[in-house]
Picture 1 (tube, rainbow, N blue to C red):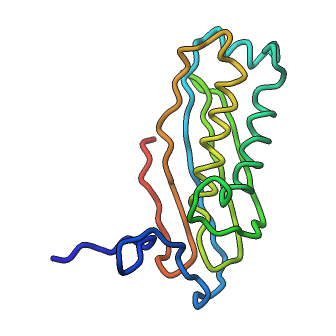
Picture 2 (spheres, helix red, strand yellow; picture 1 turned 90 degrees about the vertical axis):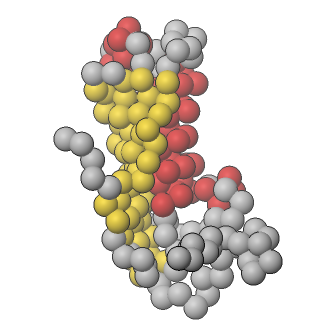
Picture 3 (cartoon, rainbow, N blue to C red; picture 1 turned 45 degrees about the vertical axis):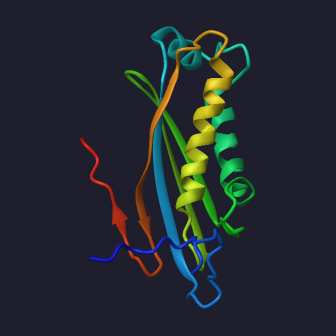
Length: 161
């Protein structure tokens, strides 16, 4: 049984950007999720708008959007894309903040990395804004939960309810 070939390696095994010039332009979408676990007191500060650095959720949302737009500058083999939509949703839960990002494009390559980058940077921004009061905050469970478009079609991760 042969293993699938990694798309970012050329015939000699060297890293290379995938040539998407012959791929069809299609509507593509990706959604990623992540979480930052926070102390109850920290979560209360955020909910009450009393964090010393300002509105944590609004700042993290903007950071996630900015990060998605700059993914190609952060991840070496990603293509620059004309993204048509980025939505970053941040909601408190029992243990911290749940963060979800959806990115859309009409293009020749997908936006999974952009969605994952948005979630990662939004989580990092929350950490930066609360680290003075909660150095034990834990970022985790960042994952792709859905993608659509392109040759590989649709993917949806089964999430526990």
